[in-house]
Image (tube, rainbow, N blue to C red; front, side, top):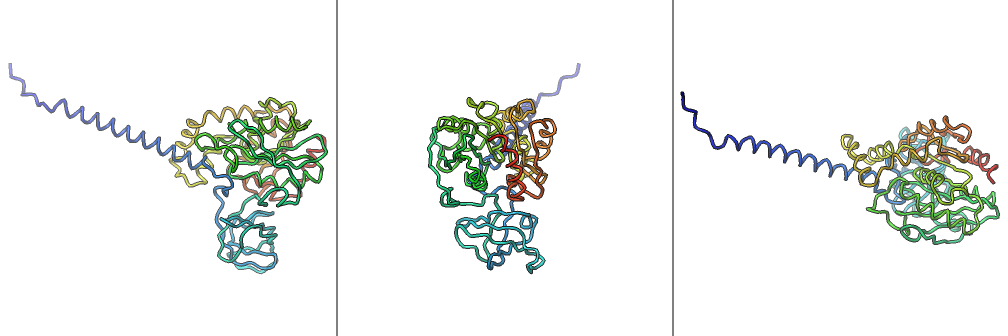
Amino acid sequence: MAASPPRDETDGVRPAKATAAAVTTLIGVGAAAVAAGRYASDVALKGTSGRPFPGEPRLTVHATGPERVTLTRSLASLRPGTYGLTAPGLHAVAGPVLDRVPHTADTVVRRLERVELGALSPGSRVRLTPQLHAGTPETALGLPHEDLEIPGELGPLPAWLVTGPRPTWVVTLHGLGATREHALNLVPFYARRRVPVLVPAYRGDEGAPAPAGGLAQLGDTEWRDVDAVLRHAVRLGAAKIVLHGWGTGAAMALRAAAESGVRDRITGLVLDSPVLDWEATVRNLAAARGVPGPLIPLAVRAAAGRTGPHADRVAAASAPDALRVPVLLAHGPDDTIAPWESSVELAARRPDLVSLLTVRQAPHTAMWNANPLRYEEALRRHLTPLM
């Protein structure tokens, strides 16, 4: 019988080393994926209050003149309606495009309504924002108001109250990246109708408590601040309440209408660009803020893992069967953050309660800006039976 060849002592070591290397590589890839997911979810959800919405291009101011401003020509600068122009230390308001005013092929001239902060001069780099006003109801609109401090889950929440004699109150809820100043666009409409308007800040806003981990949760935990605000409004005398929310604020309104301890006082909803599909909105936010495409699924998973099962709760609150009060839903197909299709489907499934106002050529949370007269007429018709 032939002798066996001598055994190489490294024969068992090589496979072990290969296995160890493979495991190390997998661990490294896994750790990189986790880190990438956390980074991408931070980019998507760590929005600064008052930060211009992602995806909005910077526009150069080419010239200014009496009641006009010349901007870089783009789809954004050609939008119909009225928008804020914002930059660090600068806030102005630009009205409609002035088609008959001479301009070059790469510029557009809009009516300049006013400059509220800073100086608008050639070379300024600005972004469009739905938020027209900077300041308080009194300083921005000339409307007297009360400054309130409402006890919230994480601490006191500052709020403005513009009083009125009607027993039905409106509570406004701004969206991600905006501030409560966004609601000042509609406060004059309500004030003309003598409707009390409560304009609160919530966790993550300036002057309000920070959210856990610094992450916005697209209304899923923020709505508990809304519940605190509603209870406070009832204590102050609100017999009935209409919630008017934009973006994530609309999602918060839906959660409050479904789960608040004083939901029986809520008699109507106004939902502007509502976030009804949580995962799609996180994907769109990540993409708009420059997260590379391959990392976007990781961002969604990381966001869900860090902040909870939002998708199910948002879906439950916005389910057609969950609605019990009349809803005015203002949305349009040019919203690249919150999918318009979700709003169309909701309106189609509950035509008895939901009126859909379709607004085209308007970005996220800017349905009023694109056509104020049409928006306010729809709002008037919606509110009249609720007063």
